[in-house]
Amino acid sequence: MSEKIRVVLVDDHQLVRMGFKLILESEPDIVVVGEATDGREAVSVVAELRPDLVCMDVQMPVLDGIAATREIMQLGGAVPRVLMLTTFRDEAAVRDSLRAGASGFVLKNSPPETLVEAVRVVHSGDALLDPQVTRGVIAGMLQDPAEGAPSQPADALQAVPVSQSAAEHPTLASLTDREGEVLALIAEGLSNADIAQRLFVSEATVKTHVSNLLAKIGVRDRIHAVIFAYNVGVVAPVE
Image (cartoon, rainbow, N blue to C red; front, side, top):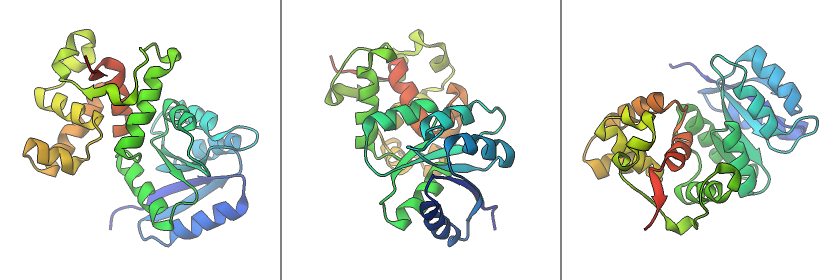
């Protein structure tokens, strides 16, 4: 049996942590190795325990979840993936979480099986947000002047071939043609299965391409590959 996913739970409500712990530890492949009651404590616990994944509440005293995630990403070494938890859907919070380095976002009132699947998905390096949410969030990033990008409505975005942008961003030149295709399809919100069907290859082959391109562009998971793709022009406004 493969090693269990080691999780740290961060929430300022003890009952919430207890409930999540019961849900997660009922699964054979997940173990809760630590807990924290606020963002400041979370950074210390993560630095000490080095878990695989952190379930992080967004709103907490002392240091909120987004700020704590940002500090965790700066710890150095093998930092964990972070799954943000919240009681409401807030695209601004999603965008800020992604900028801080989080790899997923789930509502606290989701069914137990959704939380379990979210932990597994984020731990595997896949994106948690569904395609429509992802596109809306990234489009919002493009509309944010702080991102230095032109304002465009979400429905005015589409994937364009990587080759059109390679000259503008040296990192893209390191990708093979096939890796470039896969990056563009990830930016469209396609899953590995969808990409395999589109390119007429196996899912195992797609996984290899995804792993290689993530290493080359220097991001840790698919959702940050999407952000990279938008930032460098793999996804561009429709003419």
